[in-house]
Image 1 (tube, helix red, strand yellow):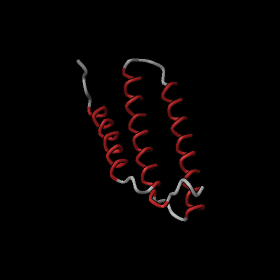
Image 2 (tube, helix red, strand yellow):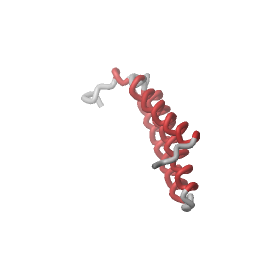
Image 3 (spheres, rainbow, N blue to C red):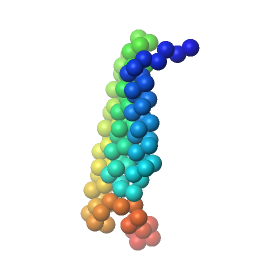
Image 4 (tube, rainbow, N blue to C red):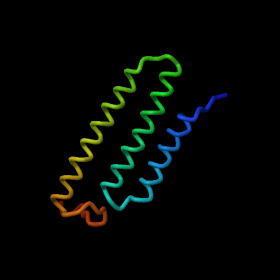
Length: 99
């Protein structure tokens, strides 16, 4: 049986809130990217709690944090490209045939 601590419950709550905001505010690209980053932060915190509680090395969580930072930079560059080409970040204004 798993022992759930308060930080673990809080990190699950962070991931669920990020998922809820990703589903609810899906019309803007910036809101989608922010909710994905919030979910990554919750998963990073949960992974850090789990790896330190079992006594494993923390290198895997640093690798995950590096990949999350690369994902954020890629999302930001995509957002800049979309705003420069379309003028806004609404998903409804994208037309795949015009690109």
